[in-house]
Amino acid sequence: MYTIGEVSKMFNLPISTLRYYDKEGLLNDVDRDSSGIRKFNDKTLEALRVIECLKKSGMQIKEIKEFMNWCSIGDETLLKRKEMFIRRKEHIEKEIKELENALEMIKYKCWYYDEAIKDGNEKRVKHYSSTNA
Amino acid sequence: MYTIGEVSKMFNLPISTLRYYDKEGLLNDVDRDSSGIRKFNDKTLEALRVIECLKKSGMQIKEIKEFMNWCSIGDETLLKRKEMFIRRKEHIEKEIKELENALEMIKYKCWYYDEAIKDGNEKRVKHYSSTNA
DNA sequence: TCTTGACCTAAAGTTAGGTTTATGTATTAA
DNA sequence: TTAATACATAAACCTAACTTTAGGTCAAGA
Image (cartoon, rainbow over all chains, first blue to last red; front, side):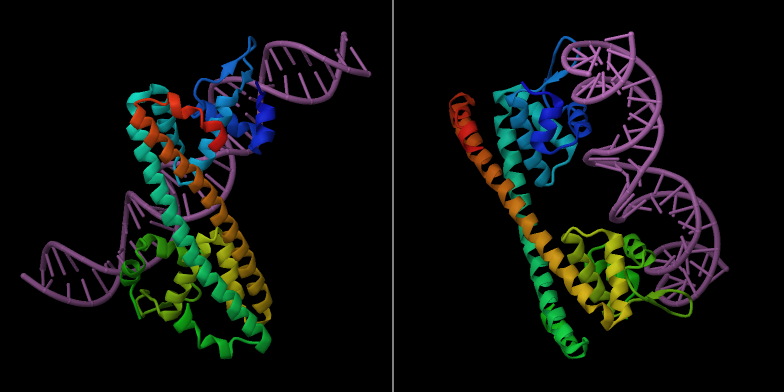
């Protein structure tokens, strides 16, 4: 059992964010002690790891909430959940490709400015712009 | 010379976004015809390509504006610009790594649900959670 | 006893990056 | 001449994902 402050440190997430996730229904059934204080368990930690991952994959909070809901419904949603992960996989693979393209252009720009700095101006290197970037 | 509508189609960007970029100062000195209509040139197209790339690398509009400003100042900002691209390179490389980590977890989840669907439930496969994800 | 620190809630506020709306102008085809 | 298009502006609006604020509870240590 962990307090909200402990979990906040473990995940490097503001306490306000954890409360927000709870309020939005991303953290199914968070236990409370007799005075209403949240007691997080290992299931919550696992949920937070999944949330981190799904956010990275471009999902919105309300979509993640929907997924968490499917999880608590049970076996009848297994297929839906699998299909969702397949879509996330495709999304993230596409995103990586796009980032790699951007990275190529940025690397070219690093070279471009290296050369320009050597020359003191962009005159010579400018000619390459249309052919390389 | 291109109209805003043509550029919108070329870059698959809403006209409103192009006007917004112009207003925010991301598109240095866009020419206008005698009745005030924007006439984009190849320099603008190149700027748009750079903007796309810098956005992908995680930069904010106001930071991109600052960079565009450096470009119009001239050779004295060459070093600054190069350093900026080096930082963008680092940022994007870090981002790719994080996405690759998320992708690993998502792939595991795809396998997990594949197995669970074969079994009709998560009972058997659940045991692997702590060791794999 | 008092104060400090960690927790709680509801509700308002914030920010980025656009988008929409309302209104107007200029060109062109029927 | 009228209607449709494509352009223009300023200003209001929107959304997601938090964050901040204001006010309150509770347990522990000095």
